[in-house]
Length: 585
Image 1 (cartoon, one colour):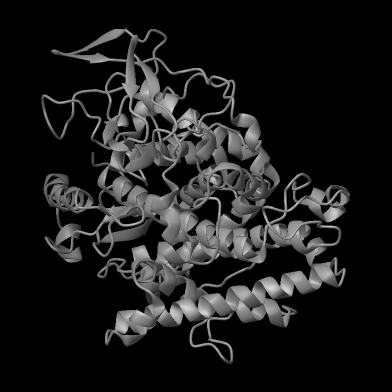
Image 2 (image 1 turned 180 degrees about the vertical axis):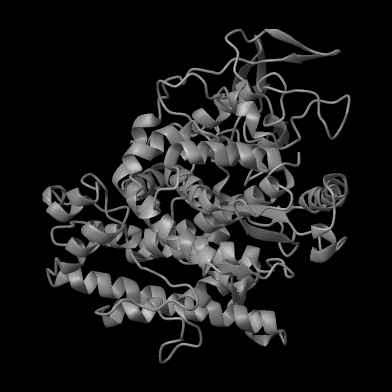
């Protein structure tokens, strides 16, 4: 096995899919519902890639922006309700009950991302507890949105998705017949979640196919007006009129590309997939979309609570972007560019740099022949068939490619292991520029101009994965191979643009009106905090910061890197009512 963390080598490996293919055998367990874009290689993978990439376009990114606003407000309302004491002040404002920190942040962020994926993947508007469906909602939509299990099911649709994610390792590693025999509650719940999921998805796909076969354009028109539907778009390719093919090995129909409903989704040239392939791709969209987004949001909130200066930087940029305007008036097209070069993107990117969703990316040398890498002017020959592990963590900490200062947490060392979003604005024109910082000399790599990629035309997705956009020179762009939150090359994440939009929008909505503080209940009561001066408050918050960093250091990788049951207690605080983060470092 060869471990690689050199950016130059990583870029060569990830950009040459034929020479350095993905070891697809490692991913076969993810084909539990059907082959998909993750589990296939070669020409079959190209078909899956083309079919699934077609729905990830700017039109649908705008729809995700809108839905994320709705769902983030739903999460905030659930948090405010938890902290509401039932009392109001003399102006009628709710008085927060500060004696209990938020205890369900991880679960709530899971629900947030599931609700958004329900919209992205299936065209559904899913609810938060206490919410109700609007009048006139059709029975089919109500079945999936309801928080009560429909007749014949043991779990509602949202709880099915939650439990499927929670028990995913059971389901990936053990056959269902064995789980049915194991006398453990987790095993029983895993089986129930799997059975409910299969039935829900089968019925959902049947409903979409029947509507298409009947020539029912009502659902298409509704979707075009209201939302995105990944599964529906794939079903239109395969089962709509004139689809012309029933699997990824079939031939595309000659007449399908001119259909108005296909053009509405930007899927004019998408090939058809089989039923199992549609279900398989829906599953990996759900799994990958949730894991990356939920963990990144959770980690970012913890980092911002632990690093108040970064939170204030974020809020200053949010104030410049949207001020106190109502989120219902926000326009995607006018906000997305500025967000991509703001502290919002910097905070998200820094989380993805410090805690990459996939710490190690497996590759292999083609079994047909040895391959040569050019690294810093030297040639390195890798034997055919050898396994390669791309080390994203080390690549993200390489001082040759990242701005850095001396660490405040580890004196005498650089701060590349620390969370510091400000580094995304520290660009220099000369890669060898040296800047004096007291007695410490720090290196400033230049911000790299994006280079054309031979694989960019594969899917037509914007390639600005570093969070910047064309024409901006103030936002740091790492060189290719140095930053891998969504992998890189032809097999990079299909939904990265949608993920970026979702992650940035959550921060935009949340921190426009609120701040996040670490809960200090382990060291001081609310009454004690209220009686403290700034020196005492600093001391108690430093203890909470140390505990937070210790917990974050224990993150482990299951599907992606996450806390997996560990918690960092936090509080949601209205801006202007903070006890710590409005002034502390």
